[in-house]
Amino acid sequence: MKWKELEHETCPVARGLSVVGDRWTLLVLRDCFRGVKRFDDFQTSLGITRHVLADRLKRLEETGVLERRLYSEAPPRHEYRLTDKGRALYPILVSLVTWAEQHQPHAEAAPFVYRDRATGDLLDPILVDRITGAPIEPHRVTAGRD
Amino acid sequence: MKWKELEHETCPVARGLSVVGDRWTLLVLRDCFRGVKRFDDFQTSLGITRHVLADRLKRLEETGVLERRLYSEAPPRHEYRLTDKGRALYPILVSLVTWAEQHQPHAEAAPFVYRDRATGDLLDPILVDRITGAPIEPHRVTAGRD
DNA sequence: GCAGTAAGTTCCAAAAAAGAACCCGAAGGC
DNA sequence: GCCTTCGGGTTCTTTTTTGGAACTTACTGC
Image 1 (cartoon, rainbow over the protein chains, first blue to last red):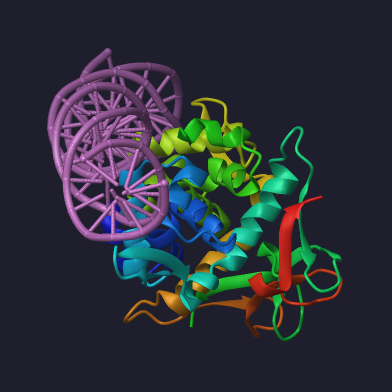
Image 2 (cartoon, chains in turn purple, orange, brown, blue):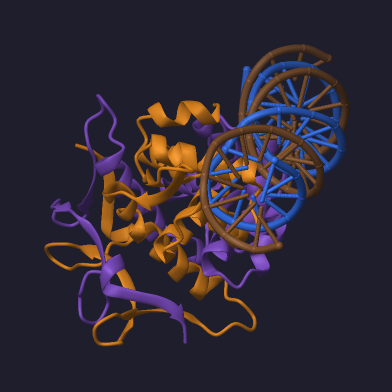
């Protein structure tokens, strides 16, 4: 199976990965959520080569995750912003961070945490059903097509 | 930045991706959650080359996500099972599936859904705080080190 | 008119993945 | 005994992707 063919797979994992399954893409998106918008800021923040960065930004724009907008006419300058589709990736990033902090911790760095912006309370992210609030765990659910 | 160096990054996104950020790894894990355990079953299910599959399984074992256990002495035969650390990746996979179904849908296939195994009710996975139940969204939270 | 800046491109070398064939140690059929 | 099959890999060779650095374009400020 080639990478390009993934986007037309019926499996939703494969379709998701066709957009964000690449080595750099989620790191680019992490920066987007941190407020990074410009090419050179991504580049210095990530240490990615300009070549690969240009390609990833183009793909993310093509898939509708980022929007490329002109913020200066002369000289032409662009910035990249998350679309609604892009912001909807947030739970994936938070789940990844939570997992990494718990199971792949860094030896020295202080723990990385999420807090409620209003109250400052520590948050403990967990996946539940929107209606019942029941936790979503492998042994409690079935996955499949309707 | 080289890929191998990612595992010692302080950023939790980078550390998480050092384990699951690869093209194939999450597809292998998808199969694990579906109950696939044997080398050849992964290979035919994924269409991955045997070479790359052997490498991914080895890495996943090394990082403690999968456990390789002998189920036959002669000839020696192994199977791969999720550890607790591996099962803890479930929210990432569910978040990815949910995002893909909503924003990257397949033209023809019936929708892919999660159901409560006991009641059969449709589930709508959402990330919330374990204590308060408040949804975790970019504009409501801050992310950083303690 | 020279240096600096933002956003890329281009070129070449190195690393990783694809694809296919091959290997090993049983076990089963005949 | 000999041949084939099966599970679980390893070894090739060829493409594709990355990495690294230099070059381009269109301004601005000094």
